[in-house]
Structures are given as C-alpha cells and as structure tokens.
Length: 142
Image 1: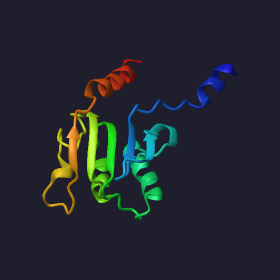
Image 2 (image 1 turned 60 degrees about the horizontal axis):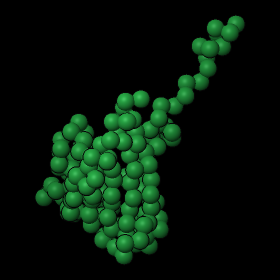
Image 3 (image 1 turned 90 degrees about the vertical axis):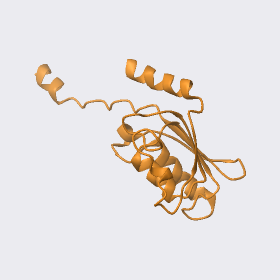
Image 4 (image 1 turned 30 degrees about the horizontal axis):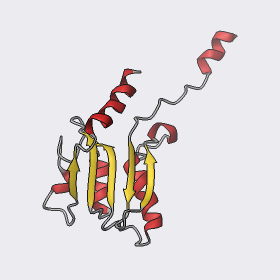
C-alpha cells in the first residue's frame, strides 16, 4: 500500500553544520579546504577541521606534522578537533565564532593552551566572528 511504502522510504540526511576549515602552509599557500561532512558521510569524526588536517598532511610533505601551518575555521574547535590540531603540531589556530557549548579553545575548555601538553599552538579567536556566527544562525533558523 502507498502508506506502507512511505513508512519505509529512506530518510534524507540532515544538512551538515556549516563549518569550514582551511589549512595554510608556512609559506602562505593553501594546503587544504574542507567543510563539515558528518551527516553526509555518517562519520562522527568528519568535522571540517579533521578533514582539512588530514588532507593538508597528505600534501604538506612532512608526514603528519603540520608545523608552521595555520588552521583557520569558522567555529571554535571542539575537543576532538582541538586535540587533532595539537597532535598535528599546527603553529596557529584562527577561528571565527565562539562555541560556548562544546568549544575547546577557550569557551568550555582550553585544550590547546594546556601547559601539560607537548605543543601549544598560538590562538587568534573571534576573527570575522559576526560573519561566522551569521552562517550558523541562518542554518539553525531553517
């Protein structure tokens, strides 16, 4: 019956949170760009930062180390992404909007500045904050 078919129709994936990340090399060259793909890929680790760090490491030429590189992201990284940036040895993290619920670069936690870690990238927060926050407000307004 048509009603029965509607019950078994595949559910379309939810749109991903509009977060973008770019990794810039020490020479200013763009190494990788990524957007959140957690919903699209069904992968809880497919945050923009992780995808960009993976892609940048593949082209940077120093194995997994991204020393001297800058991670730029529209939203304050979560604990997973902040930890990945520390482990990748990025030199700087630049982000736009603060994330008071899950942010790990100063809001809820400050993973990247923990002196117990063997690497602490420089942080530049609130860069283009209003523009970055507007993207998120638009997403949640839909």
